[in-house]
Amino acid sequence: MNKMNNKVTAVILGVSLVICACNESKTKEMKTESKEKLETIFPKGEKGSAELFTGNAHNFGFQLDSVFTTVAGNVYFEPGARSNWHRHPSGQILIITDGVGYHQIEGQPIEIIKKGDVVQCPPNVRHWHGASKDVGLQQIYFVPNTEKGVVDWDEAVTDKEYKKE
Image (cartoon, rainbow, N blue to C red; front, side):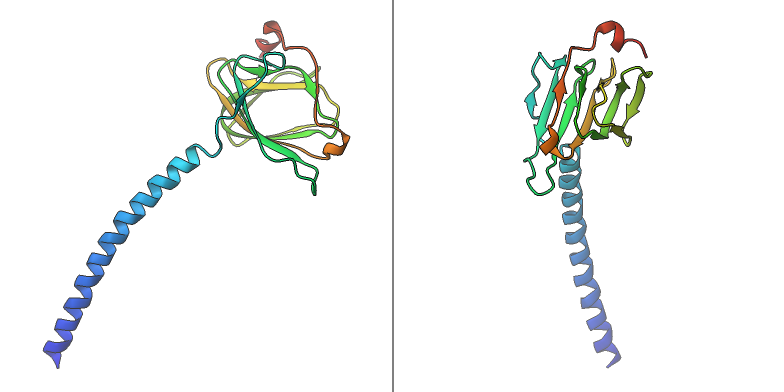
């Protein structure tokens, strides 16, 4: 009986090792796939209009939501790129997901923003945001209550205004 238990234990142990080896290989593959997906959460999107952005900014907008009346999307600003001055009738929330950039509310100093920051742009307040000179910036934006409007665009942020960090 003892020899039988030892053989059964040896077989179970051997099968377990094979299963673990297979699972470890599969786990590494899954981690690699997940890592790749996390680094590229959203497509790059459409290049922003030169009338609204200085430099290269790419927007990937999500579907307008008719229940929550919210528009959202992802913007990638290449180094040195920035939005024009603008305002949102119901405000805007930015979640910085990568890089380093600037945000400025008119009449206030420029703020440095980076990965992990949450920026609240108050309703109807002129502001701009974009990448730093040397590092790109990626952000997710939310504009609520779109029945009041989404964005009102103004003039470009001058190089002098942009460099006033």
